[in-house]
Amino acid sequence: MSRTQAPRSSTRNPSSVTSARPPVALRTSRTSRTKNMSDEFDGYIATAQPFAKPILGRLRMLFHRACPEITEALKWGHPAR
Image (cartoon, rainbow, N blue to C red):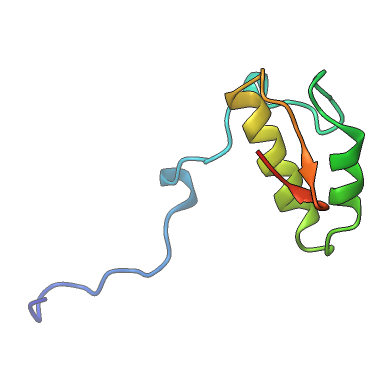
């Protein structure tokens, strides 16, 4: 950087940053369930650490959105394929 240039600001202009969230129409309700969601997984997520619950729920939703025919299974108390 030359001496005549002003230093760049470290903060971003909020209007120039695009949102990473999809449009409202593409979002699914947190309470909506697909036919392939199991009660076992509900229990697995319920017993997870508090910080992990929203992460596991989001991953679960993304998997079901990407592959609606996916089935959930637990083996030895952990998610399995």
